[in-house]
Length: 242
Image 1 (cartoon, rainbow, N blue to C red):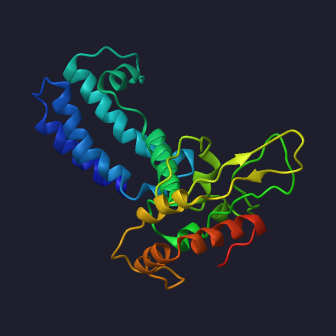
Image 2 (image 1 turned 120 degrees about the vertical axis):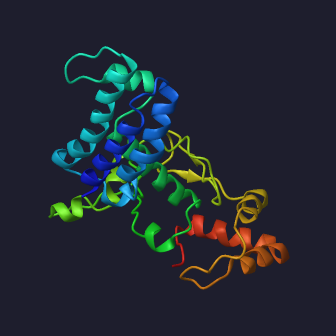
């Protein structure tokens, strides 16, 4: 359905742009009219089979074939890499992977405020120090339906956590020493919590705990040491209220 609709849109663009000679104009038409149809809501329906992924790529390859003819770019048979390089475009699969990882990063760092969706992300908490500790726990799935749920593939692909900025969340620094039996977490300071509280948006609906953001800001303003103590107690006891 998506590919058929987008091929019709691409045909309209090709008829409109058959006399164009500028790469920038051709790329702008494709990126603003054609490609958004292929990527709308892709974080939810990202195809996990090669057949469906190739059907989506077929639309972009047809655009590359048209661009190579219009712009006079020589390409080997069925290989449109020179066109993609000239136009600065990557495959749709790479874009879906990037946006999926960005969605998960935004969800974990508080940019996206969706507690019920965040609860589906399971973290792996090691009981002892090891050389390799994955961040996420990937549960066993007996069916393809569970194996390819929307949140799961993003957890498999997310590798680099070090470059994620903290937005609305306080970073936890983990210090590992050879003599330690486990990781030691540095406690939160008042400045850490103050920075996190300052990024909490106002005028938003409360989450499942029914505590409005304005109340959290007011509580920290009145009792900063008490709020910081609560967070540090959660870290020290490894207990987080639900």
